[in-house]
Length: 293
Image 1 (cartoon, rainbow, N blue to C red):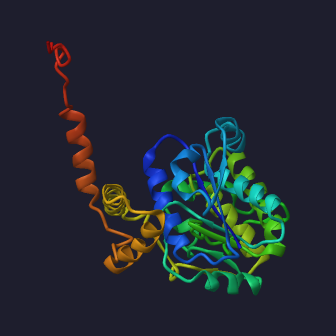
Image 2: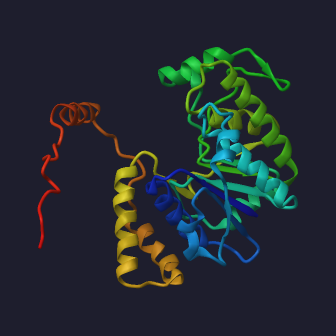
């Protein structure tokens, strides 16, 4: 299998998440698996040299892939297209950076060998979701895009994991791109446009099954996971751990079973936002005026 990651921008949070995700994957990687990391700043993955193939992507590519309208999730479609062209004889498996792999990779490959598509899990139909997603649904329902009429049969699957069998890669990716572009053209797209596009393209051409038993997708508890990732990286640095030791230490995170979702209080979030707006930190004007002689 060709396993793909994507990370861009300057925010170190995304690189830290992706780094841990790759380590969890390498703990389960077989000799025949290939790992590609598409990164705007590949220097953050130098410790993984020889274990993964880093491919630098530029700001110009990112702008082009996002249609110069800032819809960066479309880049996921384009890097999968890129990977399919690089290695045409391989299944494709994509992981978001906030995914921690706990299942044997042979489980993924077995399904792909059977011609079954994989996504993280079915989240339901967009007509029953939040305001922005409903607005997107209303803009495209009943429309025929690339031969497919968008209807109530098309649920929204989470795209934190995308597995495409070898023989279906190009057709699924092409269809997902067409649908995504059509959604974006309505001006009513939510951030899930790419996700819904893959959901439709995959289910139109394949039987799709969930992978939530094989990965922990912690988008619902990023703060808790980021605290653990920071501890992992700092301890590893202070202890001068080898990359091989880091890979093994991902087992400790599995044993800890950090929650992947935490039901957070909206009231707490709004109060913190209000307090931060009303009581801003102030830097004294003479803060840097001290003289040391």
